[in-house]
Image (cartoon, rainbow, N blue to C red; front, side, top):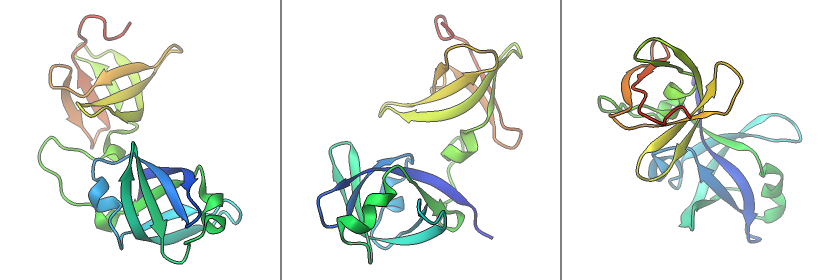
Length: 173
């Protein structure tokens, strides 16, 4: 049975020909949003998961504009605003050493080198230079922003869902 992994979110429609504006949550936009790629989303009216096939794909500002086969009218796609897009596990490629999919990082517990539990990773921001992991603190308080750089991230164990970081000056403030 295939598992499904989030690769983007429909944030709006674009024009009247059924295009949707998507914010990507993947480092593999070219593959995930390629023409012919199948994605899954949930119909907000019926709550059923449906499979859509990409008919067109193009970049526009900070968004990816997609249209789907058989849904090429604004009236067919408007209801999908706010819905997440998912790719099947069958389309995931093997990664190089020290490369990870977002779903492997999300939910990982973050610890300092001294063993102090800081919290769990709840989201990932793609900044261009490097990803930034948003850590929800174990105790109440503002989220911690952890840059995914080798000076900070010392060890990632996706099997145990743990990440060890070096706390640089000012990182936790």
